[in-house]
Length: 216
Image 1 (cartoon, rainbow, N blue to C red):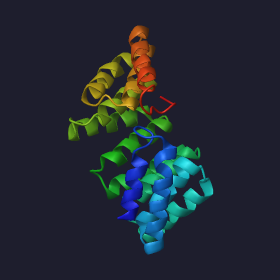
Image 2 (image 1 turned 135 degrees about the horizontal axis):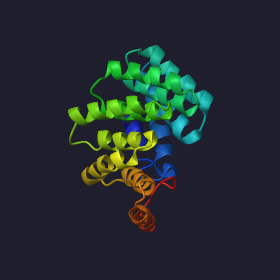
Image 3 (image 1 turned 120 degrees about the vertical axis):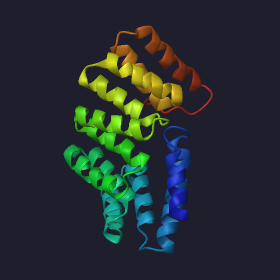
Image 4 (image 1 turned 45 degrees about the vertical axis):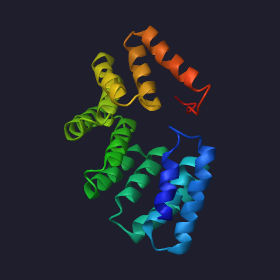
C-alpha cells in the first residue's frame, strides 16, 4: 500500500502539482514500503522513480529498478521504469527493447502503451510509434493517448497537417497541459501560428493561478 501511495504522489507531477510538493512524499512512502518488506518489488520501483524523475540520481535509480526486476521478473511496471531510465540515459534502442518486455507482461496497460509510444519516438521510430498509436485508438477510442502520440508521430515524420486532426481530437477528449502543448507545436509547424499562440497564451494565463510545468 505504501508503494502504491508513492506512485500516486509521483503521478501528480508534472501535470498537476509541482515536483517539490509531491516527490518528497513519494520518496517517504517508497522508503516505508521497502522498510516493511525489502523483498517486495513495488517499493524498489517506486523509489527508483523518485530517484530518476526528481533526484536525478542515475546510479541509485538503476540500482533500485534492477533490484525490483531481480525480485520479480514479471513486474511490468519495473520493466517500464527501467525502459524510461534507459531512454533518459541516452540508450534509446535499449529502452524500446525493455519496454516491449513490459508490454508483453501487461498488454492492456495504457501507461505502458504511453511510454512505449514515447520511447519509440525518442528512438526516432516514428512509423512504429504511429502504428502503436493506431492500435491504441482501436483498443481505447475514448482515451486521448493514442490520438496525441499518433498526432505527434505525424509531426515528427514531417506531416503535421495529418497530425493536427488527431491532436485536436485528443484535446477535445482531454484538454490537459501536455496535449495542449503538443497541439500548439502541431499548429505552429502547420502554419497556424495564431492558433498556436492562442494555445500557448492559454498556458501562460493558467500558470498565473495554478501550477503549470515550465517545459510546456
